[in-house]
Image 1 (cartoon, rainbow, N blue to C red):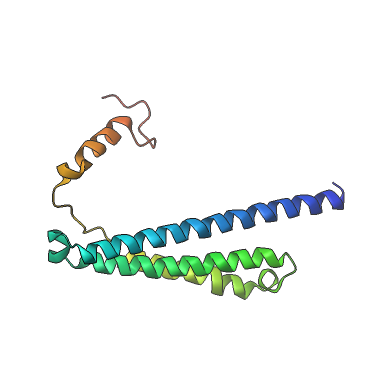
Image 2 (image 1 turned 45 degrees about the horizontal axis):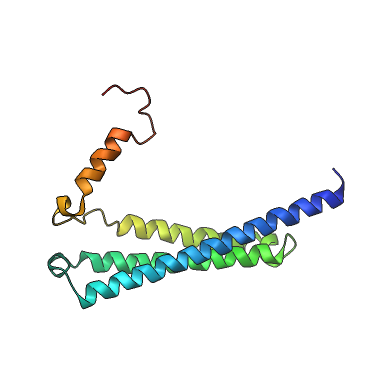
Length: 150
């Protein structure tokens, strides 16, 4: 393949990656705004369950911290790709560990430490979870249940 074609393909894939990272940043911000709205609504109009169990506050704090770390990592990746293959961030390996891997390790730690698995719903029938879970079970998850007889 001629070098000009390789350069064109490299530029194409780099621009695709930059647009993907930018889209990720936008979706991340949408998630953050949605989290803040939910948090403020619970604070201004608390439910009985939210008053009884303050665990949701730890979960929201964990989401904010994790979201900021992922935002930081995504911005780093966009800047890295915008600088190109000969940019400082791409050429020096320590930046990958410091600004990409380390934030994700911290994210994993926060999810491990503050996993919201203990959150229980007051009335599962009211929110329709049991019906949805039953429907998902009948449809199958798509993993390992092919050919299963019911």
